[in-house]
Length: 71
Length: 567
Ligand SMILES: Cc1cc2nc3c(=O)[nH]c(=O)nc-3n(C[C@H](O)[C@H](O)[C@H](O)COP(=O)(O)OP(=O)(O)OC[C@H]3O[C@@H](n4cnc5c(N)ncnc54)[C@H](O)[C@@H]3O)c2cc1C
Image (cartoon, rainbow over all chains, first blue to last red):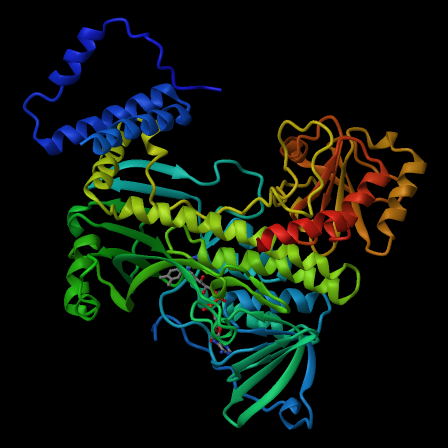
């Protein structure tokens, strides 16, 4: 069974971070969201098992909602 | 009324029941002669159950309603004796095209595999389906259809149901053992019993137009997301018989129904789709707002709900009428078996256990399609458009594009009537699933040998090796209280009579392949052609056990299932 791995596995973390933000250069907020949606779809297909992406969505949502309680 | 079809009128006739001093009794009364009530009544009639069908109207369904009838439904229509007429009249299609803007993003084939009697879909106006079923009903002894008979009251008690009927000549009362409510989305029977019909409404409205034109577009389904001819909305085109074409156009939630349905608005829209030069005539126009809903229970004692009376869906996916006809297919043999005392009343609990999950599946599919077509929020639209964009380049995204997931038969995986596999099957047709078809060597189709009663398919690679003892045990099985018709399925080249059992020769090995039967297998089919059980080796005892369970005679199990179905 495929599971979402949250081990420390990324080979070039700084490069990836820069690429993530650079990709949004010059985009409107609408376009940025559109870009994110495409990235999610492409990566979800790369992963293959939908359960992995669904688990990532759950954890991401939890992390966002945690701010609500803090604030 | 559409001009492309001449509406029959079925005259009201006074029945002797109207002059009876006490209410006449009928084993089964079906309320509503739509496609579902008609299928139910014909099925019961063919099983020898005296059935009374009541309809408040005196003709077939009016206007633009169902047009797409799925393979499984066509197989049921074959069993009812109207399949050939429907397929001959209808427009057969397997292919569809999906456009985004004005670009074709992909084409699909719903039945990429050959070797089936029936195609994925046939398009035919619902009124023809009803018309043919009404004619068929007229050929069946013991099936009585009464027009202009409106049910205005239903009172169930422990051993029957009292029904009040209004006619042009006044009211009368009837009694029955079982009442089948097939009275459509606005079911009065539901109201008489005080049952809530809850679900979800979609805000968008749809303009549904049937036009008459002679055009040589191919017989395929075309769906557009965001076409230039219909700014930002969706559109669907289907071909029907008689040069009639169906066009569905999405409208805004707050669009003015009256104005949008007027020729001043519709004609320019149609010209934009079809081209200025294409002559056409508008046959029928209506504006719909769709809803998904279902009853919590499909049975209240002796009253059963089928078709739109039990559940409604938005039409994308053609799941409404198809599901309703499958309800009838599921219920008719059970009612017949109980009335003929071949099965305990407990069998009837399986109707809900099987058809409620089927309704939920249909509602889930059609709600998801509607959500994809008409995104409800900014984020929904962003993901929808991302999928459409990627679909042009990547096959994976095409599988997410949802322009309607077209009706496929439900698999009754958790049915109390199934006997779970005791041996390994890697593929094939699992218990609860509808039979797979395959071509036979001497003409004809496998599916045509199943249904009606229980049936067994004994896949034998070398029928010559079937010993006489086993064959005679099988013949006894076939001659039991509830006969099972057993066929030997033999590979090409191994034909020849097997004792007294009929042999079906598998053309091209498709039946063995589709049933995962290369190592030998025995499949037991219910009267609705669904698999009840399958075995690697044929032993008479387990087959008898599976038959008992499929008839609801396995007491321990059906009781618990009845409880969970109501829980
Ligand atoms: C635009 C549109 C497109 C559709 N497309 C498809 C499609 O492509 N494929 C598909 O499978 N489905 C489709 N459907 C759905 C399909 O039309 C319905 O699911 C189907 O008609 C349901 O059949 P029914 O017999 O349950 O009910 P109905 O067809 O509504 O029949 C009910 C019958 O009961 C009678 N009746 C009602 N009350 C009483 C009473 N009190 N006493 C006596 N008689 C009564 C009525 O006269 C009527 O004849 C579509 C629907 C719409 C609106």
